[in-house]
Every structure is written in C-alpha cells, then in structure tokens.
Length: 125
Image (cartoon, rainbow, N blue to C red; front, top):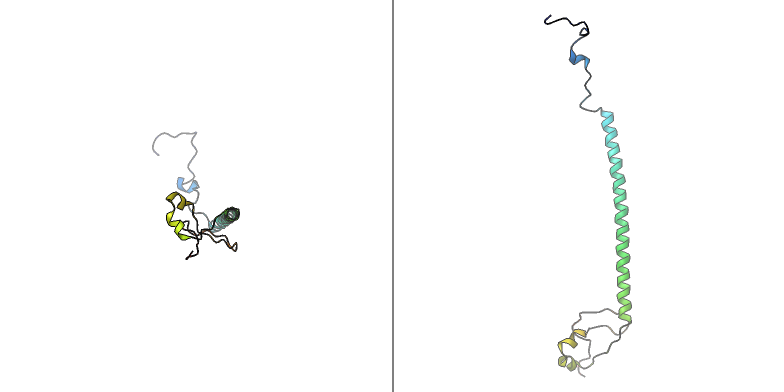
C-alpha cells in the first residue's frame, strides 16, 4: 500500500472496468428491426404524400391546358376573316399585310390555325 490511508475513501470492491456500466455500442437485433420498420413506415407515408401532391399538380396542369385550349378555340370562332381567292393579291401585299395573313380552315369543321404564312386560296382565279 503506497501513500496514506484515507479513512473517507471506501475500500475498492474490484476493478473499475467491472464496476462501471458502459452502454452497448450496438443496439439489440429487435431494436434494429423496430427502427427499420419505423423508417420504412415513414418513407411509405412520405411517398404517399408526394404522390398526392404530384397528382394534384398534374390535375391542375391538365385543367389549365384545357382552359387555354378552349379559350383559343373560342377566340378563333369569334374571328372575322376575309377569304383571299386571288393568289396574285398575296404577291402584291406588303410585309406588314403578309404578317396578318393566316392559313385556316374556314369550313367550320375544326378551326385549327396552320402556319401563319399564307392564306388558303383557289388556284386559277
């Protein structure tokens, strides 16, 4: 026994390494399985939320596109137009006038604008 004997110090019961309890570095297998299940549940819930958001955005986009299409169709229905039968008139037109010309279906079956370059005309007149 080296040093002084100190009465206020208790006698050592054993090695310090045996008395101190150190928490395990690895969790038990059951705990790991439980954590894995919880993580999977959270991920599944997140996927579900993401999918609902994606679906709502898709629906909004489709509605917006349908509205734009309907608006364009209505705009074309209400247009006033003049049919150019004589193609030589087109050749005489200025650039500014040519910009206003649009090739279209005037039968009323399906008002679809084609390229805004030349007007539908009957050749020969």
